[in-house]
Image 1 (tube, rainbow, N blue to C red):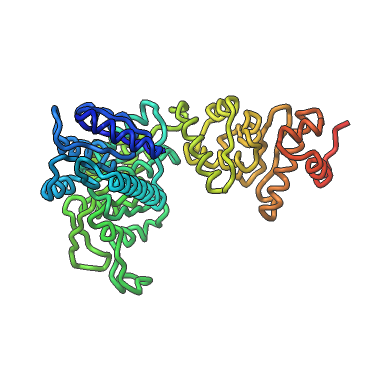
Image 2: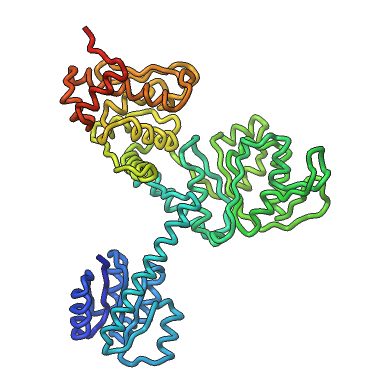
Length: 467
């Protein structure tokens, strides 16, 4: 049900509009002045506002202007008893969706409200689709460290300041960089990402600055580098601590002079790029060891944002895990599974050597291999207590479960995905049967399958009760 707000200092108009709109099954609130109306907009989740232009305390146009700052996508329909073409044009310029005169025509009012709501929905859907396309997720969590990061992003993003993002692998440094770009004045321009650790040192300069045809053996044609591709936008240099010293010198020059030269080229090319950098290394130690330039460090480290380890903000794990549950189940086209209190506590107790990235993988594994409700036993069964949740090691890993049951295997022992699934399913059913003292009826109810189906599985996997 759409939620509407009416702001008008005439009681009769408010009552009439409210009666009409509530009859059409809208959820309606009203207020008699613009100041209180703005407070309601700040605190409430309204889908559309109908606002009078001539009011005491605060003019409707001023309400519209301030509301555009608070919630720029909120559709406003302006109402006036002294409507003119000039007034309608002014309201439209200031962001109003439409303009209607008093007394409002019933059909015109309802059509305008419906169109305004449709437009608001389209704007929201477009933003969601853009977010999905850009792979930019929300920064989840309400811990003090995450709240500070969000606040810093809000302050720093609209500026041109360079930012150095530090933190362990998988902690979310790339996500911070994406939000710095999306909330910047360069959001409509490209965000170009370069993983410096993934590019061989002899190719990094060509990757960043491009090269001219024939500048080296494999340079069979001219190539545009990342700096040029990011012109007008943002360049994100991930794992910059792994960049070669010669490339560092060229990056420093580009930051100082806003000019680059392609490898093998003599022409200087002007670039307008905001540089964000990230590293999991201690750059000050790298400087001491002679692996990183101090002058480049100071150029990049105008603003420092440190992303904490997941174990330093375990209170955020329930929020992050729930978000992963919903998204992954949605991607798989299946009902959203739940994690009970014991399961969540077990997740919070894990070492998380791979941080948020590891948590995502763990939740996906639990969704695939667990029942509708994920329990503490499930978390234990599919987590590696020896060092995080990576069960994909080349050597055999043993994942201890409750009640003495265990799942020991090496991924190398499986020829295909079906073999792996059969193995995991067999161990899971065996574990549940042993837990329930081989009570087939109780086990079938617990894992939500028919008894006949469970008997078939027992026969298929050759399971037998221990003597």
